Amino acid sequence: MKYLIIILFFISEVQAQPYFSTPPYPTEGSKVVPALSEPEQTEIEVAVPEEAPLKKHSKDHRAETFGTVMVGYQFITSWLPSKKTLSYTHNFNQKWSLEAEYSWASIGFPIVGIDLGSIKEKRFTLQARRFVGNSFNFTFGGAVNEFKARLGSDFIDNLGHEINSDFTVQNLGITLGLGNRWQLENGFTLGIDWLRLNIPVYETKLEDKVLESVGSEGDRDDIKKVIRAVNHIPTFVLLGVNLGYSF
Image (cartoon, rainbow, N blue to C red; front, side, top):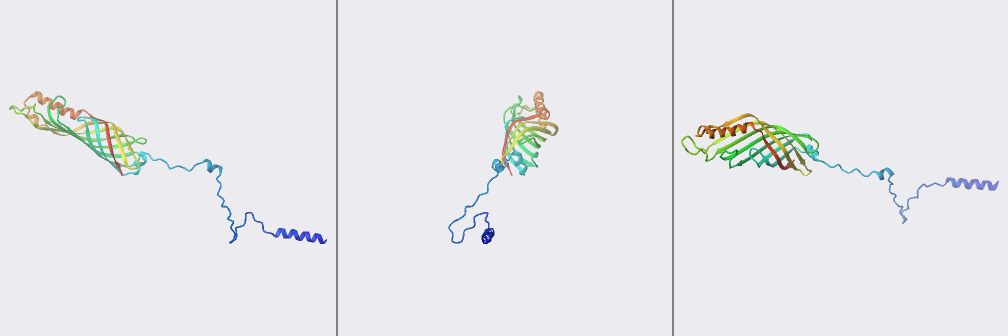
């Protein structure tokens, strides 16, 4: 009976001792520092890397910018080749923009077999750009074309004097085209007009009083042919390159 009492007392003392699931923290004077445990990654976290930032394209930059200012050069165009251009484009969203463009060129040699001392051509274009995808776009709108020429020394008046006078043709037409426009993150913008047609529709101005001074009936007919061609034959642009900045 005595031994049974001792055994029960020992068991009760053991059960009363606290149980630690982790090692106790060190005391103030202890030099032992418990190791810090790092959280373990699950198999899913190891297999799936952190999501990389999405790369932005021209359509994203276009939607984030207000407008674009550009200078350009049209290598192949009529009536006069090698036109210079200035333009401003207002960006509405990824798909739509509205562009105002001014182009001009001048030469001083004969055209279509007629001695014209000098020729100046100007074109004011207001066109919408409808983007399909990232950079490819269709253009459509209106254009005012002005053709101004000065007669050369081959023309003489009714008294046999050389004529050195101007005539001007201006008309309103529609414009259709297609191209690409790339906008980078730093604002740099490159545009290419692959093809554009300008179709004259309505004559708005004609200054041809010079015809009254031309002595030869054949010369008058030649000048009239030029005027009719400017007013009725569509002009075109092939490979127009534009460089600018979007803001």
